[in-house]
Each structure stands twice: as structure tokens, then as C-alpha cells.
Figure 1: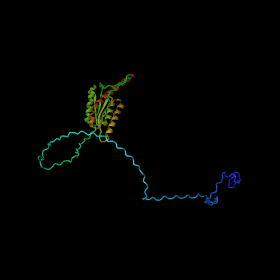
Figure 2 (figure 1 turned 90 degrees about the horizontal axis):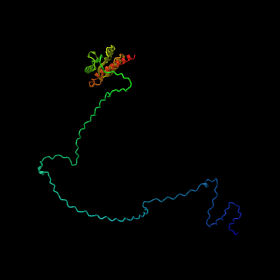
Figure 3 (figure 1 turned 30 degrees about the vertical axis):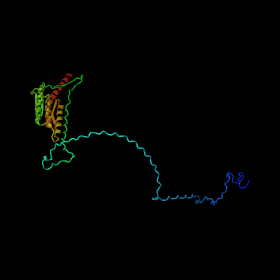
Length: 311
């Protein structure tokens, strides 16, 4: 082999770390000075080399002009042909019509001050008519009684009394307070008893001062056992004080107690109203109380009779 050629089989002592390729030929350029091998303990040798700083852009100047972009002109659209317009037919000239003025000549108006007039187009505001407030309709008073009669199914035995006054004696306890009302109650009660065939001689009337005394007198008459029934009549009108509540309540409970303790029917003919007009509208309650007393007296008679027959 000649000198300068590479022999791959030559033992140079660096196998197997020897490269199998031939070393590059030496260049005639100036070789850079070799750097010493870095020391493992040298900190500065292992630090990366600083990157070069980028060069700053030159400052922008206002007087510098950038090249303008060339804008290509758009092609103009071809004009469309205009449609031909037909000429309109000529209309005949309008005939002038003379309008006669019906107003008289200016000389006909009398001279004087001109009347003030409203400007043209001003809106005329008419005064609104006074609206009367609508009065709410008064609520109708509810019916105090439901119409109809009692119907008892067939089968059970029925014991029912009737307003019969044959051979009956009746006591009437009446209050003198609010006499204008109680007098008419008393007249209606006596007429109803007579219509039920009660003799006038068999009717006893007992006047008392007021409604509060009605229960005591009714109990006294019932305990005599002379009367088949007792009718209590009176009128209590509500006032400004709670006197109405006490009198009406005690009179009602006292009359019921008199009937329960004696066993003699005592009917309730006491009016408890808000005003005198309500009392006058209920004058017929006296007659109703009389018929109720006769019916209860007849019922008690039938019950006693059947009890004696059954015993």
C-alpha cells in the first residue's frame, strides 16, 4: 500500500471504536485553534453560549410611504336596454266651472268690532258630562224559612198533634214593654186561638212588665196544671248597649226551662229584632206561636193516652 491510503485491516489499537469510513482529506483552510477539553468541575465550561441578540427594526418614519397595492378596476356591467314607455292618451281639458259665492258683498256686513274666533284647526274640547255614581243594588234579604212540608216514609208509627182547640184552656203571658208591637201580637194570637175552636172564656191573659219577666210568669201558670199550654208574647229591640243580648238570651232560656220542668208546652212568641220595622213585619209570629202551643198540647195528650193504654 502506498502512503496516504486507508487500510481497514490495519490494527491501530482503537478497535472497535474505529470508524469504518476513511477519514476526510485534510483541508488547506486555516485550522481553528483547538480548545482545551472542558473540565468536569469547571462551571463556566458547561454553561451554554449566549444567543446573539436580534437586531432591532429600524424606526418607522411618517415620511416613508409604502407602495400602494394596485387595485384592478372591476368591469362595468353592460347597461340594460330601457323599455319603451307608451305615451299616455291626452285627457280633454277640464271645463272651468264658475262657483257663485252666496256670501253678500262686504258692504252688507255692519261695521263694528270683529268677533274673536278660534284659530284654524284648533280642537274644540267639549265639557265632559258629569258621571253619576252607580248605586250598588241592596242585597236581598235571605229567606228565613225553607219551603216545603215534612214527608215521613211509610212503615214507622207516627204520633202527630194538630192545632185543635176543643176543650183546651190557654194562658197568654204578654209584655207591656214596646206595647205598640205587643198589642198587635196579642190580637193576632187571640184570633188564631178562636179560629182553632178555643173558646174566649178558656183564654187567660197575664200582662207582665217586660220580656225578662216572661219566663217566671209562664212557669207559675204552667205549675197550676189548669192550662193545656202557655203562649209567651213580647218584643225586644236592639239598642246602643248590650242590654238587648242579656234580656233576649235570658228570656229564651227561661221559657224553655219552664216547659221542661213542668211538662206543659210553652211556645216562644218573643220578637228579637234590630229595629221597629222588622218587628212590624213579624206581627204574625203571635198567631204562629198560638198554633204551635195547641199542636204541642194535642201531641202531649196523645202520648199520655197511648202510654196508659200500653200499660
